[in-house]
Structures are given as structure tokens and as C-alpha cells.
Length: 464
Ligand SMILES: Nc1ncnc2c1ncn2[C@@H]1O[C@H](COP(=O)(O)OP(=O)(O)OP(=O)(O)O)[C@@H](O)[C@H]1O
Ligand SMILES: [Mg+2]
Image (cartoon, rainbow, N blue to C red):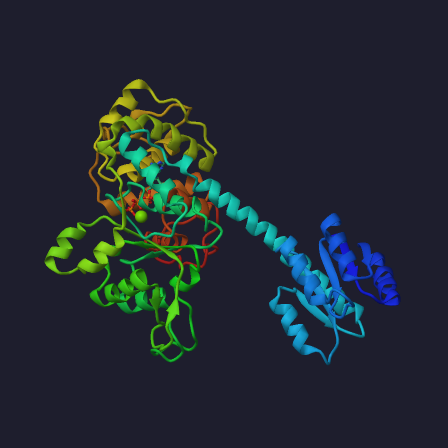
């Protein structure tokens, strides 16, 4: 924050501002009335405006309105009087950032400017994050040239201008969440939040309050009002993963959201409205659930206004070479490796394998093989799914072992490769940080570089 525009009709006040602010290193411009102020604002685009609420001809509130029309992110500090709180409140409603009362306390003003500066930095960061996220979840990052995938892209494009409800279906690992995010970040509301809720992971009561929020006293432990994910999503996207698993009670409440865009917080009377888009995803046979009566038919039809069916990987094998190339790039970026060469024979096996866990399984297999690779070639012996032979760093052995044992050894291996960088490890493994911490504890894995007893808070006794 460098440049400041002061709009005040009192010459003496203008000059005093100029002296004070210039001595703090700001570039200060001055305007004596509203018209001149707006004109200067448009021309120099200052980082901050200090605006007198009482101006002749074009009043302070009108000037504020004009400035915010020109730039809806403009930072304006109002100069007001103690006896004029009504206009001040009006100014805050119109988007003023802060107000200070006459006579001016310059320390207070500097605090206000500081605050504006921090907010502006945060705005820039947020803009950056949104752009980053939009790029990350760009449609270009969904690999597929087969006709089934082209249909998916077409639908995502079609959805960009509406807030229609969508149901995404597909086996585990086919990219349901990826597509849900692509829908969001390609839509007109991409700057609004994308909020994901996993409907299986939570007990009914918890899920209900997670989704709809609750009022204070709704249940033991509800010590204050709390917003649910529906409210948090605002005009963005609420992604309901494993929607087939929600209970009949919640299905009824969700129907009301999807149908009338209405809901109430748990324990609350007030009817709230939402403008969020609902995207549901499921791997289960909803038609069968409807037949059995465990899933409401009306909700089923409301959800599948637009339905996206993601093909299993084995139904689009032609895409596997592209996917391998894309995923290797992604993994190399994450692991700072350079494994790019895939022998013809290995690629052929990758194309012919059945990939029950779809793209996720392919990604995991490649991650593992890249981790084990020594040079820049992807080796078949490092893809145990394709052929479980070979002995490599104690991970792949002829000895048959339990999944748990394998998991513990693999986690240990990735931790070693990342030098116990837990964030990267959890990223590579595709699990959350708390889950990783729990597994480290459960399997009593220890960082060999740290002296005993200095491990991260975990008890070390009984480790042998
Ligand atoms: N078409 C694709 N192109 C590139 N990457 C993909 C594609 N499909 C899936 N992926 C990647 O595969 C992984 C699994 O995808 P995602 O989590 O979206 O699947 P899912 O269908 O939600 O799985 P689950 O049912 O297990 O939750 C992610 O890392 C995702 O980025
Ligand atoms: Mg998923």
C-alpha cells in the first residue's frame, strides 16, 4: 500500500493529512470535492481513499458509492463526526472499510491504514489461491480422449452457466471428486467455496449438524450456534460424496434443500435459504436402493437432473497411455524425481491390467514404482500388481504377508524417501495428516534420524 487519496473540502485538514502521511512514506493526492475525488480515483487508482463524509454538492456517501462502482475492492476510510453515527453506519453498509472520528487521531488512522494493508495482501493471496485452484482443477487435468470421456467434458462445459444439481456415478477411483471440482472451478461461481462432505464417514447426528449447522442448545455440547457446510458453501458447490449412504431422515431434509433450496439448522426454527449447487457422488446402485426402499425415489430423481457416468478404466483402455504419461509427470513433480521412460512391454501390461481401483489404483501403483526406481526408467519389477516377483528394498518379497504388514512397511518406506516429511508422505499416500499420524503411532514407526525419546510425542517404550 503506497498511494493514498484524501478527499476533504477543508484545505487545512487536507494539508495536515498530506504532511502526516507523506512523513510515513505514502504518496498522497488531494481532492477538494466529490467530483474531483471520483475523477482522481479513476485516474490514479490509489491503494486507499480517505473520504470526508460531509462534502458539499456530491456527498460523501455518493462519492463512496461511485468509487465502489469503479472498483468493488476499493479500500475507503471515512472521516466522520461522533454525533453522526447514522450516516457512518450507512457508509459501512455501502462498503467503507473503516471510519475514524474528528478530531483526527493520526495514530488511530495509521492503525486503520495498516489493517487495510493487511486485508489487501490477503485479498491478493486469495485471488492467487483461486487462480491456483482453478488451474489445478482445470478440465485439462482430466485425461481422456475416448468418447465416454468426451461426453463428460461436454457435460461439464454445459454446467458452467447454471447451478443445476448433478449426480456423478462411477466405481471407486474413477475421478468423481476430480470431476466435481472441475464442475465447480469451471462455473461462474468458481470464486465461491467448494465444500466436500463425505456422507459415509460420519454418524447420522454428526452428519446432520455438519450439513445443516445447529443452534445453541440443540444437543449436549452445542454451546454456540454453528454454521453447516450448506451455509459455508454460500453460492459455491456442496459436494456430497457417497450420497447413497445417507439415512432416510437426512434424505428427507436434503430433498427439501434440492427441491426448495430451504433448510433449518438442527434445533432451529428459522428457515434458511441456500444458493449452493449440490453435486452428489456415488459408487452404489441407487436404482437398487430405490427398489429396496432404502433411498427415496423423489430425491433420486431430483439428484439426477444431470447425471455424469464415469467409465471404469478397463472400459477406456485407450486412455491408459495418456494417463500413465500424465500421472508420471504429476508424481515426478511431487517427488522431485525424473522417471519418464516406460518400456513398451511395461506399457502394454499397464494397458491390459484390469485396474479394479481405476485411476487411483494406477496412480498408486505408479507412485510406488517411481519411489522404487533408481534411474529414469519405470521397471516392471516395481509394479508388483503386474508381476509380484523381485526383491526390492524389502518391500516386494516372495514371502506372503498380511495387508497390514505391507501397509506398515510401505508407509515406513515412503517416510524414509521423504525424509519424514509428513505432509508430503500423506500426500503421496493419499491419506490425511491425522490418519498418517495415527498409522505411524499404530505401527510404531520411528524416524531413525532422531534420537530415541525425541520422537514426535509418541511413546517409545516397547518398541524393541
Ligand atoms: N481422468 C483423470 N485424469 C487424471 N487424473 C485422474 C482422472 N481420474 C481420476 N484421476 C486421479 O485419480 C485419483 C482418484 O480420483 P478421485 O478421488 O476423483 O476418484 P473417486 O471416483 O472420487 O474415488 P472414490 O470413489 O474412491 O472416492 C485422483 O488423484 C485423481 O486426480
Ligand atoms: Mg471420491
